[in-house]
Picture 1 (cartoon, rainbow, N blue to C red):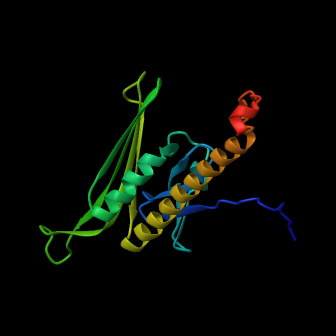
Picture 2: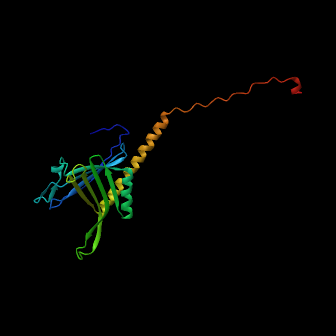
Length: 203
């Protein structure tokens, strides 16, 4: 049995894996970081497919920088994605660093109807991430992850919880800083000098 100290908060991650027989599947995980005021995202492409077990694997690409990627969503970006899901609209993000550019898109996932290929139906949401090197335009990779409506609800709930935990941490830190500051000393009021009264003042 494992014992944890009191007041220790364990934040778990939420994961989605979508392998397929074509070996073009993708997986992703989201993990809150209260300290960094963000949610970290890890993406990985499918590495193999076992036809006999109808099972895909991603482990083979775990250490391959061309087949895996990580990025950080700020608390504002997390809120923007929640808003996009609630409004059934689109969110576009752009991260610029000295060596690469990252583009993020979260939007409704549309698919052609089986009965009428010309008719597009929404089947959930999708998130696409593309990374491109500033030094070599050919050095780029992209990831596409689909979420069913149910999975989108789970992701929205996790994002909402993440924001709540980030806010709680910010409030706690502010309270701790306030408690560490000694209260200002209250200045003493100067008493007016006493004046001796003569008998004429009393009578």
